[in-house]
Length: 70
Image (cartoon, rainbow, N blue to C red; front, side, top):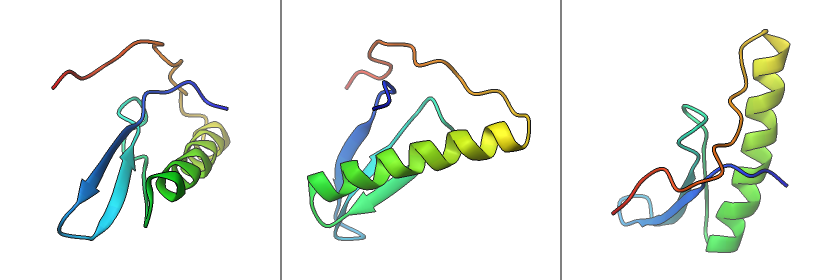
């Protein structure tokens, strides 16, 4: 389980739930349900971290706090 902030929202344009991880640039996933989007984003986080490590890029530590306020 990862401890990064995840933003989950409905996209009218795509007709799916979108999940984004602001601390990991470009890390996004989608799903037909909230649960599916959350499952997909956890896989995307793992892949993002694996790729960063493979290329020697830094992996940000989770801030452990809310990053964006509405």
